[in-house]
Length: 164
Ligand code: DQA
Image 1 (tube, rainbow, N blue to C red):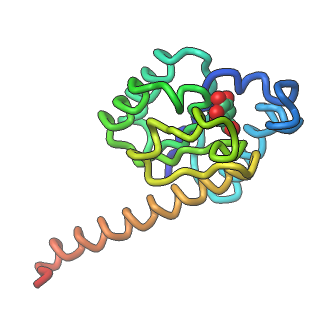
Image 2: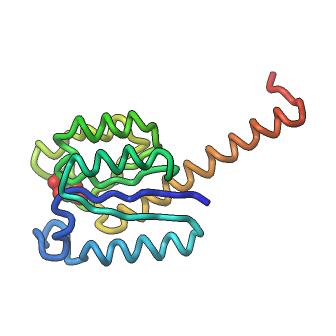
């Protein structure tokens, strides 16, 4: 079973009341419920966590290495500042999708720079809660394809067939 860790960064616990004109009225609980429904529908395991602390997010990423196949992260403000989060993702080598509720490229110039995007599979930005669902679907497809390729390699070895 595919296992995905979803991480929400700082201030996302305030969704629903925070800057509604930008982030809408959906709460983090509602986002997590929608993520849970998606997991059940797709038959995958998803765990979602939120932290306002950079070090805690770094620790969860480090621990995810042995327990998850991939990471979907909304690093929130740490997107634009955190070398530590980027280094943690590179260190564990988990396939990662960066997501944002708002379109960070349409906002203040300082939000256009992401420390995470260059080391992620991709970035999805601007679709509200749907950004998470799209991110999870993209990661699932990536992981399933990677598994099929791995299985093909294994079966080649088992049957003695070698690629030319
Ligand atoms: C955000 C965008 C960030 O620039 C901001 O700091 C956030 C939320 C988003 O989901 O749109 O906290 O990551």
